[in-house]
Length: 272
Image 1 (cartoon, rainbow, N blue to C red):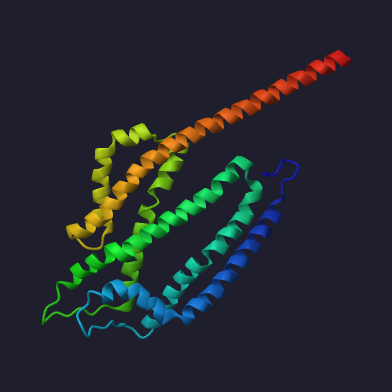
Image 2: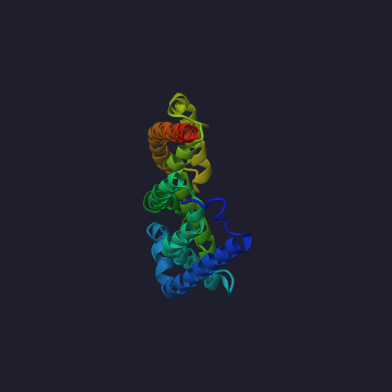
């Protein structure tokens, strides 16, 4: 329940609450980082599997500076700890913002977190299992008896994380469209009418985001985005319908409130 004007906390109380939530989150990340760093070599092996599968036999990775391996392990352990502790971090964020939300706003939080997480994870997994292997196979195909791939840890990890992050963000399209439809910027009819232009934009985005210029990788990214676009049209219809129902509820509450106030005034006049 949202705080009323009489229940509003002073700024210092909000800052203290924010500090507490941040400290809790940082402690959780530190614990998660310690756990993940203990499995750093296994985590790095998991991330490099798409490359290992297409590399020539007896290939190996390198680090080109003394601290590169250490910082690469630190980086991968940090990102793994964020994934590991994300449920707790989201809970801390919820505990901070929930007192200021109205009940009708709170009902959107859990579905938003659930579907956003599900879609992002789906995008990352799709990129990892479906898109990365052919992309790396394309790059490695340029090796010859004279040219051998020597991939550094830092370069590979940076490329892989950017690629997976791009897929995760692109898979958030239905959630993005839902909120645009809720505030009236787009609707299902508009999205359906502009479908051919959307497909063109999707292929342009796929060409920009995929790390390899081959058509296979670009199509592998474009196909799920086109499917998500069709899902977004259905989501937009649902969002508009929910918005209308919510507006009707608000109008009903206002009408009931005015009627109650009128009845109170009538009773007061009769008593007088």
